[in-house]
Image 1: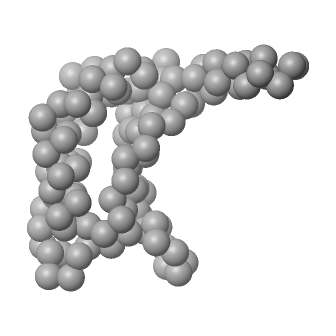
Image 2 (image 1 turned 90 degrees about the vertical axis):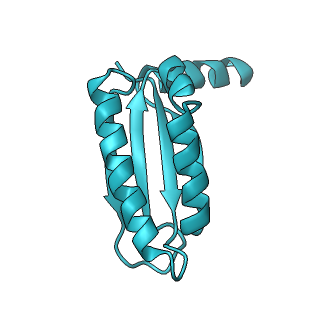
Image 3 (image 1 turned 180 degrees about the horizontal axis):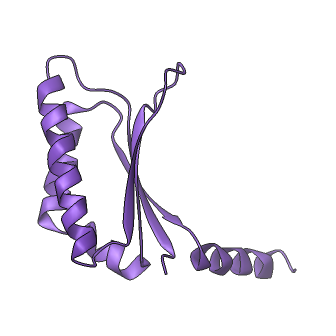
Length: 116
């Protein structure tokens, strides 16, 4: 069961690089689909946000085992896609997160720190 997540967010395509951004989105979808079928990740969800005046307009939420996600984000293809995203998307970011039992672990550590 997934205990970790990768949140990969972006703002919008760089002007003049919209076609490259679309191609990267398509390649990324194929890559994540294969990673899921290969058992490297448990699931992924692409999300495009509606207009809201902010600087986060879309993201992928990738779920899996923390150790497997750590390996996954070091794969050459993943790293190359993030580099390309930095070239054709504004505000790209990759953030690790906890879900499921991972939250239970983090919260129990926090509770210990505050004396609960």
